[in-house]
Length: 115
Length: 115
Image (cartoon, chains in turn yellow, brown):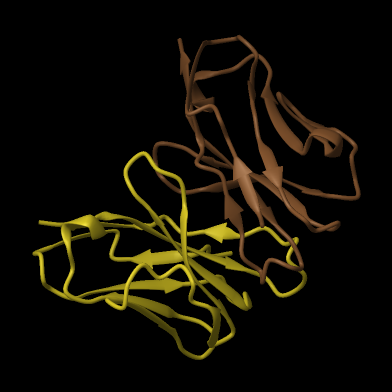
């Protein structure tokens, strides 16, 4: 079946502009995660959705970052007034219902470059 | 607190050598789950294995094997007879019922297999 998809695959923007990153999880997966991976770094947790609600927003680095999920499916991560330090690969992952032991399935990521 | 440490940042081996990637974790939970993911140069994380805290049996899958030792809080990953296709960044991760469904990733180990 289809995996997690993300769009766009690459995004180049100018400092100060807003960007929207999209994630389509695997159908039926109730949990959705956003991570940020800077060059040569590990995965930085941003936010987690269970259904449409986000019980854990602790990882969002600033109030310029926001995310929403509608219909328990597609999620959008929005970065307002982008800064150069926002340049990174943004990864989305989804997880099927059940206990925490289910593995996450990752998308290919969106590479964001802020000039 | 939950934490995963991958002390080896980069490893280089010559093809056909064996290599072990270390993972040490910290958790106060008695029930937890450990994972290994592979991130090849293409960028998409691929799930390799999941291990429950109550199952300390080591696992072998082809050239891959995992050594889970609760006494040392380690979950090490060994690749036998390494191949060039094994070149990737490998991440260890931890989750559990008390982590709010959050996954804690190590910073990754970059493995280069030299032909």
